[in-house]
Length: 108
Image 1 (cartoon, rainbow, N blue to C red):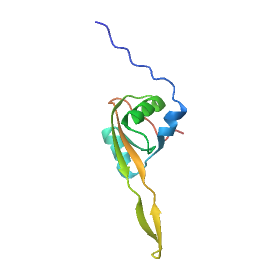
Image 2 (image 1 turned 180 degrees about the horizontal axis):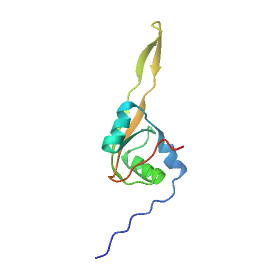
Image 3 (image 1 turned 30 degrees about the vertical axis):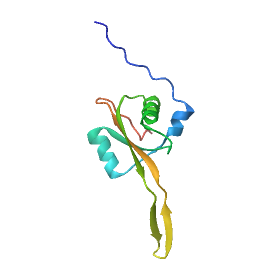
Image 4 (image 1 turned 60 degrees about the vertical axis):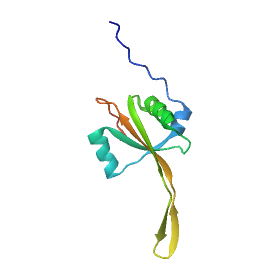
């Protein structure tokens, strides 16, 4: 039987780095990363699931199983009790990486 060859990912382009903005680093996202092989990222507000999947596979060179996207709304806050401020909203993606593959966000 013919074996399926692994799909070789092409090089990441500028568009791929525009889709993925930065990783979200919290205690919850770190536990998701260790236990369930999921990575949480801030992404471009115009990005959809297919864009995030393609960009993540090209940039990190891993197989993506699924992508979930959440719009985190802006929140009002108080600064010192008297002054009001706004914490800006953003679009967040939770990317599930295939078993046996991992990425290292904290390279030295």
